[in-house]
Image (tube, rainbow, N blue to C red; front, side):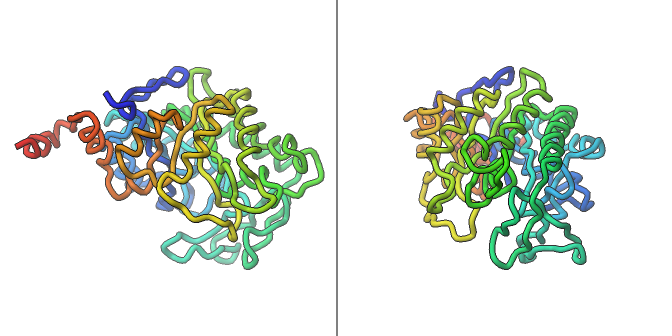
Length: 360
C-alpha cells in the first residue's frame, strides 16, 4: 500500500488515509447569519464520496465580526450546531472524518464575496468595523481596524473555546485553528501588523501569546482524545516580517500547548508580499517544521499529482497532504490517485460500474 493511502492515528482519531481536504471558504451561507446551506452539504459530501480521508469545513468564524464576508459560516451559538448536522452526516456517512477550521478574520473582515469584487463593506453596506492587534490597515485603501483592548483579547480567546465546544456538539472529530493568511492570529504573530507595546507585542514570546492562549483554551475545551491542528503561514515573504525561524519556534511551543499537527501554509499578511508560487512551494516549510520542531505536519500548496504527494511523504517532509484547488477541479482525485499508486481503489457502490468499465 502507498503511504498516501495508509491510515494515520492522531490522539484517539484514526483517519483512513492521508489525503485531506484543505479548508476553502465558500461564502455561501444563505442566511447571512453563518448557517450552513444545502451547498455545503453537497460540496463537502462530494469530497467525502471522492475518497478523502478527512474533509475540513472552511474557516468558520467564532463570532459575527470575525467573518470575512456576511456569507461566511459561523459557529457561535446552538443554531449553528443544528445547521451543521447535515454536513457532518454527509462527510461521516461517506467514510471521511469531519473536521472544522475555527477562525477570526481580524483586519481582513467585512468584505463582499470574491466573485462580486471583494470590496470592503461598512456599516452602511452590510458590514461592520474590524478589529486587529494594531490600527494598521491591510492595504492603503482599506479601513483602519480598531486596536484590540486587553478585554477584547480575553473575549476572543473565550469565543474560540466556546466555538470549539459547539463544534464538538456538532459532531466534528478534528479542530483546526486558523493562524495563517493574515487573519487575526497571524496578525498578532507578525511584527509588521502587530506593533503593540504591551505583553502582546514586541518579542516573539509576546507576539505568540494570543495565539497560544487560544490554542490552550481550545485544548482545554475539547476532549483529550480529539486532535487539535493549527494552520500557520510559515513566512510572510516580507523584509523584517514573520519568518520560518520564528515559525519553527512557535510550532515547538504549540506542540507543548497540546497541538497535534501544524498545517504549513504561507503568506497572506501583506498586499505587497514577494511570492512566486511553484509546484510544492510550501513543502519546504513542512519539512523544516517537522524536523526541527519535532511535530506532525501537513503539506499544502500546488500539490496536484499522486506521485508528487507520495514522494513528499516518502521523503519525510510531511505526514499528511492537504489538497485545495485540485479537489475543486476533481473531487474524485483520491480515487484516481490510489488507482495510480496502488493499482486499484475502492469506488462507492453506486459508482462501481464506472470502475468496472475502465478495466475492460
